Image (cartoon, rainbow, N blue to C red; front, side, top):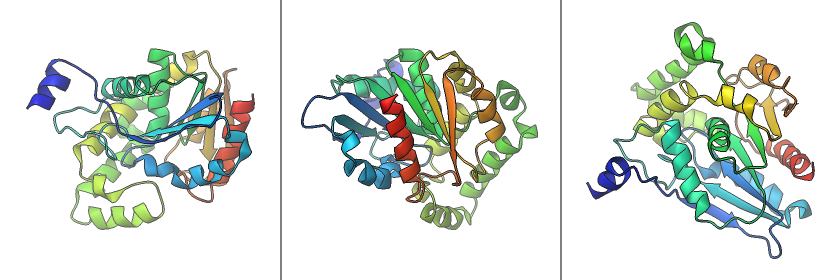
Length: 267
């Protein structure tokens, strides 16, 4: 009851769980903030971090990973809408308490890429974005989700997660992706899909940003619209890097993502 009064009635943003905060021994020349996707957690970055920690390029880079609202060890209030506003305000409060000194590069995966875009558009605190498997949808697609294959696929996924066999399906998917089966029937999963992926404004916001944005796409990704990424890549501040991978931040894909992050930091 007290939690609801503070965060709903008084509208105080949640403070998210900081899963890792690796500071360099010397000066923080850059800070990487990692945002995971829907029905996942900061464990999304486990394999990628192993590579980064062995690369001297990142010796002066601070690494921060947080669990988004509703996932990992962060709060998951049943009454919350898990809308863009809820998520970005929580991200802002959390990062604001970490006393970051170096320029910030946000690395977001899937829904985390959309939130990285929305957060940066609102608070203007990042110097660049690296968006991995960003499921950008155009306003037209969002207006007519029933006629869009992508929206229909997300709807089928939600239905499968709620069915009797949903947990078994989710368990298989979990072995080959960043999806964590325990979130299959959670309010955070269902509402995040609806309010962030299908109703957000990331498509328009990313085009208006005045910082470099790198889109990292897997050519075998069955979730992300490559056509939409190609449209966005026509903007001067947006670039596209592709590899023969799927949607997840897999061990096979992680080295490519790390190389693209390095290029972004060095640019």
